[in-house]
Length: 311
Image (cartoon, rainbow, N blue to C red; front, side):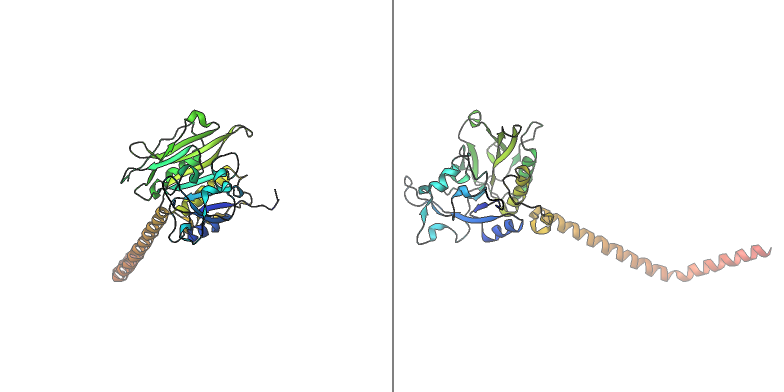
């Protein structure tokens, strides 16, 4: 491996603006698109536009919502993803890159296990109108608690209604060395957001993140930036050439809820400053209005003092 190699992240079905947001955060990103299946139900052809084999990338981030005008099926000539082993095989297993897979689900546009890059997960349509989500309580023995907390915080950013649920396609005992840890569920217990880890037997049996599955959010790109920052800390060997960026804490990379809080805070500070200025002005007017009384009182007090001294 070349010494100057830098991590590579493949963004599937992210807009140009979203890709620019992630890139400004210091991540090395490239874009690709996977379109809606074409043809008969039993003879699906999935159009795609990806410049390199998926195994060339360290991180794979996928959204099931295709940006307007970006569906590869709209192009005069397109290739069938299901015919390209360099695309399908790396996503059907965890034994090689991409080392981390992140998905934003919500709409069915093809074989979900393959498109998420998680061989033992699939999606099913959510019940119509799901608009309430609960976080599964954490435990002291949970794996990757920082990742769980990060996903839990995204609850307020979900774009309702939820479009899909996540299901396991195999028994948990058959997944070793991988583990699936649901985080957000419907009130009926349907999984809406989850993450997976594996037991790194070569590094003191440490748990390391391997995938995250989320619903569609109000701002997928900002959520992705936050997750990538955390994942870069949890698996730094994946994010070669990644630098810390303190300016990521700036308003540009804040979630809408954070921006709203900041806006309300500034408004209250401004109102308080205006109130203080107003009261100071009123005090100044009162002082001027009653200044002569104060001077009389002072003069009277000084005169009384001189009289007492003469005696």
